[in-house]
Length: 393
Image: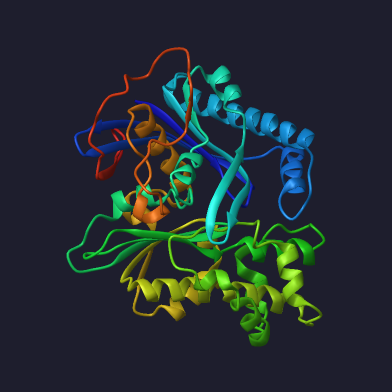
């Protein structure tokens, strides 16, 4: 089956999309990577998305505009990727869309909203489109996150004596851990790049979007008093499963905690980088992780990765590429997998990881030009394998 998986993450910097030739046989999903693109939003669309994210107020008019413009942007990327990877014909597109709000109250997810009208994708590609993939898990009592735990559990596998984990360092850091004596567990740790990016944009007057190569953090010194204030957030002490987002960790949040505290610009970035490293390291240590594979934009920040290595000297840290998943493509691969399972009528959440009361088939389906597959009973697969393209070395 020719499947395209697509997402724009909490950093809303680009649409990540993969084209996979996928096959489900017994308990194994095999996938051959046919294409991967990282397509920046048109500047006007990115600016509109940025203008409505919390804590900003917005209007229904802007919500409608974003839903359409993001949907059209995803459709354009899907058409181009289908052309280069599949000769123009994809069977299924699974679009995560753009998260604009994740509603968590008293530690429980109450709702989640991703925009990017899937009808534009179905109309442009002719493919069956799976969309709104988080809401069903939320409706069944889960957090709708981290849905990456689906792929993580399948590629990490069960080890008889070792706890292994997959860490994603996007806007928000999330982790999935698989051990020998318990069900898998996953949760959002806290901010990975969210506060760092917000501070860099503020300090640069919008001319810089992130701490390129960790340069600011490397030049700066950690302000321990400020770090202690930032670490004193009740979210970090909540038990898993749990989820968070930029609704909580945003520029306004940071300014409230600064509250007159004077800190040099690069010291602020160094301190926020240390916040990410310390909260991640605490979670990794508490889970007893021995082997850790990492993905997400934070992996390209040497200051952050060096800090994690210092704080976790006994943990083997490697990019998720070692398991056959291209690091930059991982989240898009997750949603390609969700799309494949959904059109087969197979559950795509891991209840022990999201907190859902039961397994559930994820998403809403927008029909394409033809039915892809009859919904049928099928055992949930337990293994995901990336295969080498024909003729590859």
